[in-house]
Image (cartoon, rainbow, N blue to C red; front, side, top):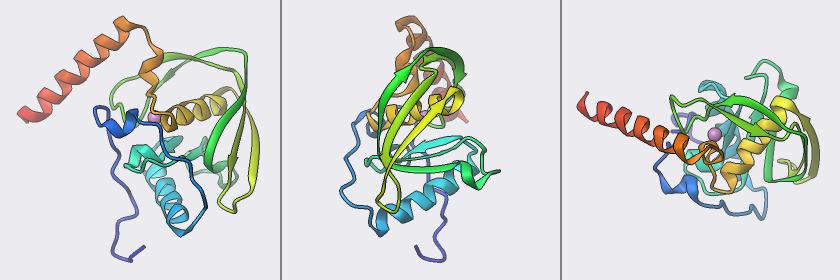
Length: 176
Ligand code: NI
């Protein structure tokens, strides 16, 4: 990365087709992947957000960053390539939002507990057990990797109301 390059990446928002596409598997953890991961962490913390997936910064590869502490606690930071949900258990409902769907927060049903598999930046396989909010974040980010936004978990009626709201926001932005 060049010194004069802003590490904060632009976040792609709903309507961009990259958010609906399944991201490519990462074949090896090279310098490009490590640099991108570092910039994604900075972007996630500055947003601020608890999770970010590479397609949200316009890179269609299977890379996610997660930090439930919002940058407060180094040991909470997780970077995973090729994340997969291996097991799901239970159910919990909580209001969710997404940096790529600004201004929309809706209740989403998610598993209470998950087991996630992925590869860390040293190329080592990781198995992570997560509960509650952390489990929710993993499900949300793995959905991004698979080209799915959280609003796709909602009813048709809710989705069409959200589309109208987003359309209205966009029209207002154009007028401004
Ligand atoms: Ni999101």
